[in-house]
Image (cartoon, rainbow, N blue to C red; front, side, top):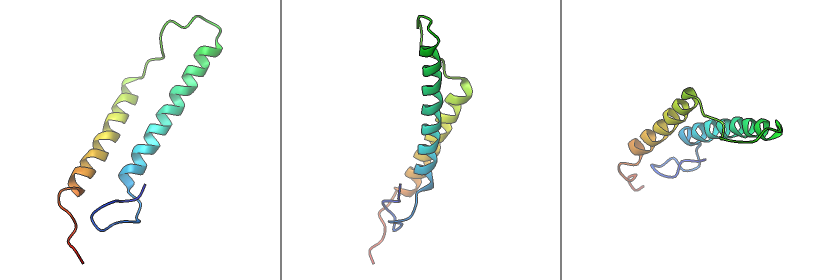
Length: 80
């Protein structure tokens, strides 16, 4: 979860943390929906649907991470 380049080694990378947190929240929420579906006793015919809001949240999270990574990763840090 720390920065790897551009002279910021050892500091927290907020882009990575934000992407991890959003992904974990979506995973836990989807896991809970799957548990409810399997515990209902009904025949499972399809997986639970992700809402448009959740998909948008994941897309924005991933875009923010990639944008931050592309901006920082352009040139190596100067020596010294």
